[in-house]
Image 1 (cartoon, rainbow, N blue to C red):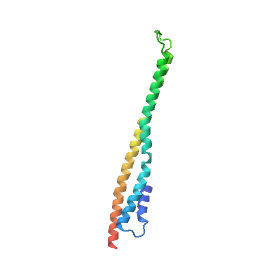
Image 2 (tube, helix red, strand yellow; image 1 turned 180 degrees about the vertical axis):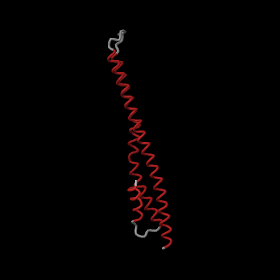
Image 3 (cartoon, rainbow, N blue to C red; image 1 turned 90 degrees about the vertical axis):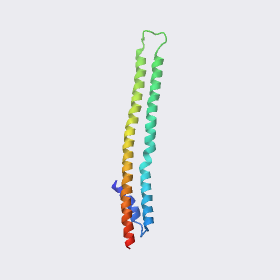
Image 4 (cartoon, helix red, strand yellow; image 1 turned 60 degrees about the vertical axis):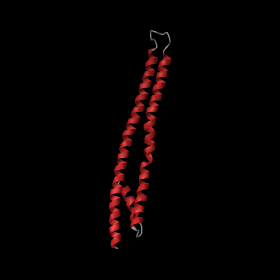
Length: 141
């Protein structure tokens, strides 16, 4: 976190005698660039969260198709119960796997988004303080 804040603040501090407006613009543009880099994985998280349950559902459908294909019309005794139970097992495993992937990805994405919001607030807080310090120093020159 500190290297990120350092890069943002150095973008403004390395300018040669900027006006307060230029100083603020340098802080804003550097912070926007850094925050954009941090948000690059949001689409990946959202895609995994959306697709995982659908893949689990697909496995469920395929497992049920396998179960029903193992059933024989008129076979009342149920002599081929192994095929039916294998299909049901496949359906349940794929559903559980899809949900597990989606749940863990959602937890990780929410943790990452919380970190992003906290970091954005810190950048605004300390960037504002640095800007005020620079403005007061600039006015005293």
